[in-house]
Amino acid sequence: MYISNIKHSVMTLYTNGHNDPYAHVVKLVLSEKCLDFEEKLIQDNLDILNKLNPYCYTPTFIDRDLILYKAEIITEYIDERFPHPPLMPLNPILKGKTRLLIYRINKDWFKTLNYILNFKDDLSVNLEEYKTNLITQIEGAKLLFKEMPFFLSENYSLIDCWISTLLWYLQEIDKDFLDREQVIYDYSRKMFARNSFRKVITKNKK
Image (cartoon, rainbow, N blue to C red; front, side, top):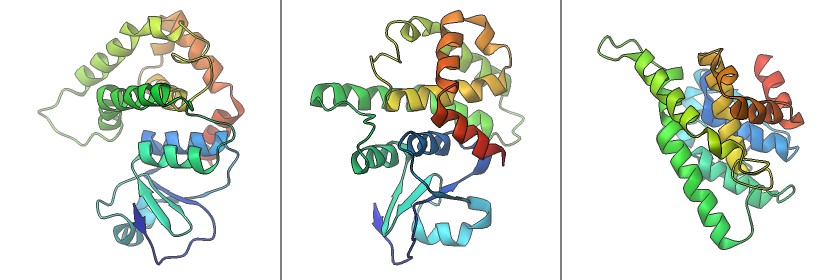
């Protein structure tokens, strides 16, 4: 957290453009809350971002004088600052389980996804192996997609924001991915059909 002397009249989100799955999660949460924000690309605002975030990475989020980075922190802040509709359970035990699951999704899956999307040429790295391993892990978790109406929950939550983003990018990496497992396909289509998700995708294409 950082308090800035750079004034912003609206919420601002610094992103790395299309290949920024973490920013996609934040945008999805903002869309679920029906909140307006201004998106700025890091490549066009690197000097400003250097002043806002000591690590100079995205997403970086600004709400008036408050600056936050890391998608997990940003999304929880947004959910608490704008509580309707709620995306985190009120029960402290369930909230703890949700945080732990998001941590695992990030550590086990999102870091690999982000690496694949932003891969820089390195002859020592087998990128296809990274893709195959990630997709195999997701397919291996297919039973989790049909236990409840949403991902391990009766209600749409922050977890679904992370999982649906992951699946959206995976289908771009492997066009046949969603067709191989019916339960993952069904879940994906339900998530992608949400107004909030379609708004994010439409805005990304502009």
